[in-house]
Image 1: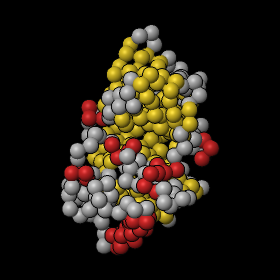
Image 2: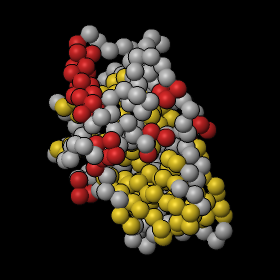
Image 3: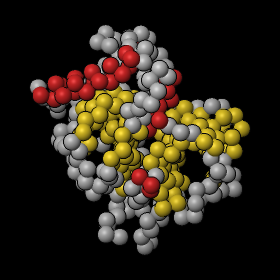
Image 4: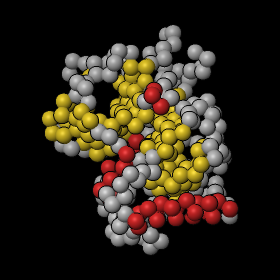
Length: 311
């Protein structure tokens, strides 16, 4: 399959957008150097040497790097989409959780039918249960947790591991080290004679799936059967690759960029994005992505599936 590359007009638009981001970084005293945007020359900082998904919790433009730009943020909220960037995260103690700070990134208040949030756990942290009839998917970004289900079955989840907990499943998560989780929750949409199962897995154990007409690599973390009313996709793009189709569909999305950088087009807006950024996409918002830089882009994408939108 031939690799799609950016058309001649697109780099001009992308360059203009990236210049804005570079200007902000320079104004913040953050241009170049070991921690800046990946330059044209490969470097150990850009190609490796840090734990997997390290940039999610240590983004190129983090709050500390913007202290000389009070009020600056790349976050944007519009009727049909939102970009939520790390410098605007607000962490606070989670109700009923022990020793855990959380930041809600997406919630029904924004127009979504699900929640997506970060949970920062420490040694001795413990989770609480979601509300009644609410399902939960947990993905480990940093550290590790011990997940206990029911009366005693325990699973160890490391970085890049995940667990899907069907609604009303008794469970708890305990951490004995600094740990960051991204968690998705939604009220389960039940259908007759279909019941989802508990699933514990890791991204690297999931098979690559066919993507007709596209070049990105795709993995799905949950089964595609009718029992499941959402799925989580892991999508990989090499530098220069892009979505061949500008998608418009009824599904909602919640997206977290795990690695890399690029340009996301939402509606008629173009956004430079990087690891650590979150995007909410409402139904039918036009969407398109192109990967830039020297390393792959990997993002995690929530998508509602298998349900009639009239119900």
